[in-house]
Image (cartoon, rainbow, N blue to C red; front, side):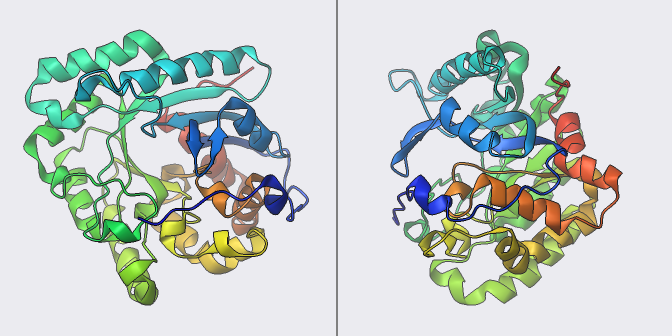
Amino acid sequence: MKTVTAKPDSWLHQQNEAVVEPERRIIDPHHHLWRKRFGQDYLLPELWRDTDSGHCIEQTVFIECHAFYDKGATPERRSLGETTVIADLVRSSHDSGNTPVGGMVINVDLRLGNDREQLLDLIHAHQEIAGQWIKGVRFAGAHDPTPDNLVIQLQADPDLYHQPGFQKGVRLLGELGLTYDTWHYHHQMADFISLARAVPDTILVLDHFGTPLGIGAYRSQRQQIFHRWQQDIAKLAEYDNVYLKLGGLAMPDNGFDWHHQDAPADASQLILEQGKYYLHAIEYFGPQRCMFESNFPVDRLSISYRSLWNGYKRLVADFSNADKDALFYGTAANVYRLSAID
């Protein structure tokens, strides 16, 4: 297992770009909250330090991250601990005058789908805690045969997307009006396409482009992986129940190694090294099925919040205003059923 420790804020502050289009409204649909990962806390004060750095972040969506679990509960109920803590933080964010967290994507073991009543009871237990803040479930599919090379070592069942019980669980989310978020690695795209075909009535949200890996054995294969990924994205776009989150490429496991630089990446470096991923995804899915994400604080290991969103804005500078609004705000508001904040 590779370990990474976040650098001090002084490292991030070496990049102090002027904010591009500071008036453009943004929903950040993907961030985490936790204690002492990568050597640092990331709770509401840390989130607001980033969301208040110059861009017009109107609200955010918390994504489950195995934080605050109730270790004394049975395995399937441990994530209720995270939901309890985050629900309190969501309420606090709306009372604070700072950027509110507008929704939560929680963790529920969807493999329980063979027992519909058990899974329903579990989802209802989360909803009793957090109510309408819950917008969806993420039970991620990421699995790699060489996990020791990775910084983030989530290891799902290798056949997760094909399991009948799991597919029933994902279908149940659609019945309940909830989304299914996931993230996985580039070599799992065919399996995810099969899932998209099997659950047409559930909205699926693929995080982080499907994570094209770039470390370990994959480091020397970046161009081959990119070409394969391009083809997979084109095939995946045929399923209109699938939406993409555009971001997460600054994670260490993607292999761009910005976290090793003397100074963090800036907007220009993001466009130069990663822009082709963003533009290809938007070409096939269209702005109405894509949403920019921060994936903070994981991507904060490599780039500041201001530079990240500057990069996104510069990347699509020539797009129409309607398309920009979809990418930065509208798609996220639609998928996660977010009301405007007064």
